[in-house]
Image 1 (cartoon, rainbow, N blue to C red):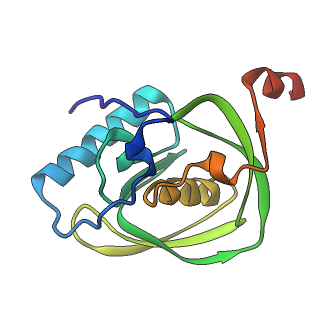
Image 2: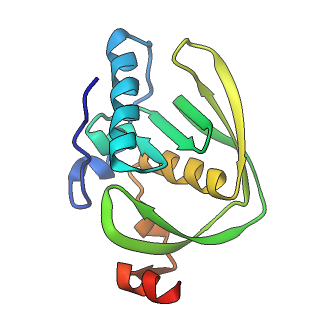
Length: 157
């Protein structure tokens, strides 16, 4: 496994739309493994393939004991609303208040080629939406109602 370089805001790759994965190859499986290792080192909760320079529709989400690998994910249902502060590994040292659904259902393919559905609320719902946005070249800062510096967040605590 390898720790991948996480692209930062300003890199044009982050603004491109990703292509679907047509076939799960050893290269795709290696990418998933490398993304998990990269996310662990970066201490994040989610990572999308374009954040590591790969324009494929792949995301991983790890919150607590729930870990998802999603190939060609799509949001199929949402409910409610929430407004919370988000951050992103590709937009370091910034935070933004973003409106998202309170509950989300996603359909995706796993590393074995099986289609599955996952549901999440609160942080998990936000993370699903945030990571899937990356696949279409959208960053949370595009949707933020208000932006904050780290000092603003610390002062609020």
